[in-house]
Length: 223
Length: 250
Image (cartoon, rainbow over all chains, first blue to last red):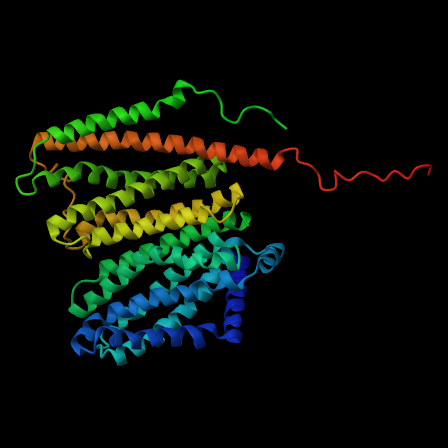
């Protein structure tokens, strides 16, 4: 990555984070929405403390994946064709655009995971063990989901009418990440080896990074 | 504007799919019928002669979609896109067939239509991934944009394939592990059953090739029709309006 690429990536990331600071969609809508879902689960399945402790980690990851999609695909609904055209005319490298959007979404997703993680530990009475592993897992899931969202947004890229399709594309594609995360957390809970699941997550993230970078230009040219 | 016919005369090369597919299916049907029934499952085992080939074709179809997608992004030739899309379409059909037959087999064997087994669930997820691929293709009528966007999805989607295949190894599942492609050789003891299964795999592969070949041809014709409509001589707006005759005005 050249210096120009870095600066472009940073500019796109700062733009997306600034937009989030102004609008507050993640902080004031998605995070409370996810918290409500965490509260509703026990109401729906019955207040059984043992059962809740058993399913808590899985519920957490499912909510992170489903609600995290809303975070990762924000740009599909917010970035207009005119804005994309302006960025192209300014000479934005497609790969830098992909990296910048993904990085911004990953930062927001990481915050989303941490807030919901604290809520699920408190509400579902989960033991806060293995924090060291969580420090590795949370960013991996956030980066993977953010890149999937960026790729899917690039594939759809038809403004508001196509934005509805993005979650349909991202949800099934995020299943490998979801499985790795749940299996790793389960391994952590039961004291089983979990390194292989972390390695699988790293591989998925690397594959997505390569695919996203390589396909950024053709996707931009197809608009 | 070209007046050449879009559909060219039938040639033997274009006629082969249906006779070949029909013959292959008849042979496979014969083998499936003469193979013995299973000691435990009885005649229910014959579902295997369609279920296993359908699952194999899902793998094959989505792998071809991957190669077609890469081929398009590298060469920018729409031929690759047609191959990728046609294969995905046929693959979705065979994945649906795999799931349906698995459920029909599961009800009398496991007692339920559906169980949360890793292989079953991941196959269903794969089905949805490629439904998404087909949905993306319907979003735009511009062939180049459609080809590029779906090619990206055709490459990303293939991540599901190893996950589905190795699910029976990575998790303790209700679904049996691989019974043919194994390091210690096939696990089917009866040679006639094994032969029937292999023949049906070959037969279904011929059916897949026939369907994809026809679908590719149909896609080419679709594009030719769209292209002709776009470039056709159509009346220009205002053409019917003539200048008023102002009589003696000069």
